[in-house]
Structure formats: structure tokens, C-alpha cells
Image 1: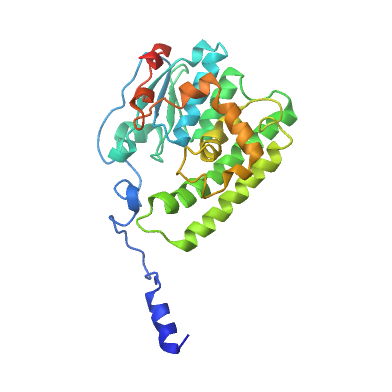
Image 2: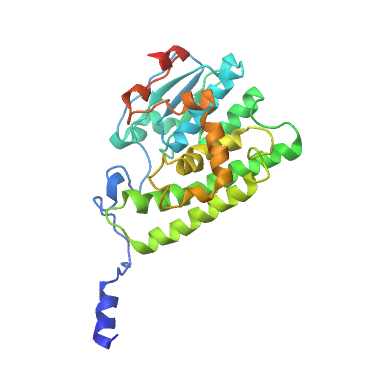
Amino acid sequence: MSSDQKSESVSNEYQPPKVWQWEQKNGGNWASINRPIAGATREQALPKGKHPLQLHSLATPNGQKVGIMLEELLALGEQGAEYDAYTINIGEGDQFTSGFVAINPNSKIPALVDHSTTEPTRVFESGAILLYLAEKFGQLLPQIPAKRTEALNWLFWQMGSAPYLGGGFGHFYSYAPSKMQYPIDRFTMEVKRQLDVLDQHLAHNEFMAGDEYSIADIAIWPWYGCLVLGDLYDAAEFLEVKSYTHVLRWANTIAQRPAVKRGRRVNLTWGDEAKQLRERHSAVDFDQ
């Protein structure tokens, strides 16, 4: 390469400014809702149903976790887990309304309010909601300390790992305004490493915490389970997911659970209309 060619190559590379400036139209599919500041943009109260547990969410992978958890609790006979679920349309900026910001100052779905406590308890961050509900009802979290710790290991693994899958791989592979090799290669490598971590673990364990289905499985499945089943980013072939045989076995097992089938529909607003459930107030809503 000549010196002129080298100079041209360097000049074509992005050079960060001394002070970053927000370009509102630069961000791909989600540019209209991403911003570098927090807080509410408009006054709007949240609806409230008749049950103590009020879920405000959308059926993204993070949102599916809580719908699945609540349906699993109900399947276990925990009638106190009855809930109302209202859709937060993140494409329209519902997460920035004053009502939603009051229960989640981070403006991310899902968020839960428990009105059964003396003062209503707000719970945000999907992992925190799963842990809160598991402890509230004494279900889906092993009681034996070693197994409980193992479940929590994997719950927090998911919370730390999924941003590389969603915000990293998913963004650059599916949503970025243009395809860029370096970030796609970088995050593909990390996602495949994570799938290998799961595959090696599940080679010797039925579920994430051993032989007991738990909140760890509920947290991980909507991301990595749906990814290998071809329901996320349309990337199954690209990632060669068939090679992760133990993850596929685990993913298919969980996908067949009736509560999982119901829970992943909660606050679903796209795709097959027959599967959509924008609001959920009782079990009969799934039959309508």
C-alpha cells in the first residue's frame, strides 16, 4: 500500500470528536427512542387493574421473563401471583411517561408494582423481579444453599452476558443502519463463546441449576433458548446453532412448558395475531 493509499484509509476512518454530540437520527431502528438523558418526557399515569401485582412490559426477551415467571407460579397453584399486565410500547416512548419513570427511573421494561405490601413495592430490572417473586412465593429457587447459589450464579450470568447478545450482536447484526464487519465479528465471537459456556454446562445438567427448573432457566431461555430455536434475530444459521446440541435440548424442553407458552405471549404486540396478547387480566384472556 502506497503512502497516499494509507493516508486515504486513515482519513476515511471515524475520528471521535473531542466532545461527543448527540445526533438524534444516528442509531438505526431504535434511534427515535434512544437518548443520552433520563427522566420523563410527558405526564401520563399508568393504568391499574384489580390484582395486587401489576406488570408493565412488552414481550421482548427481557419482558418475556416476567410473564413466564408469573404463569409458572400460577401453574404451581400460587393464586397470589394473579396479575394484570399492561403493554409499554417502547417504540412510542411509553417508557418515558411520568407513570412508568416513577416505577423504573431507568425507563426500561419490564417493571412490576406489588400492591400487597403496606406501601406499594416497585421492582425493576428483570433479574430483580424474578428473584423478588421467587422469594415472595418460595418457588422456582432451590432451597438447598448450594443449589440456590448455583441458580443465582446463572441468573446473574445472564444479566451480565445478555447485553453482548442484545445490545451488541443483535444491534449490529439486525438493527444498525449499516452492516459493519468489525462489530459483527466481535459480538458474534462473544455470543458463540457464551453459547459454548451454556452447552458445556448443560451437557452435565438438565437445567441451569442442576435437576431443578428455576428462575435461572426463566431468565436465560428468552434470550439464548429463543436464539437457538430461530426465534431471535433470524441468526440461527449464521451462528451455526445446531452445533450446540445440549442448549438445543434444553431450549426445546422449556419451550414445551404450558406456562412458557402462555407467558411469552403476555404483552406481545407483533407477529401472528392469534398469539398476541396486549393486556392480560385473567387466564381466560389466553383463550380469546
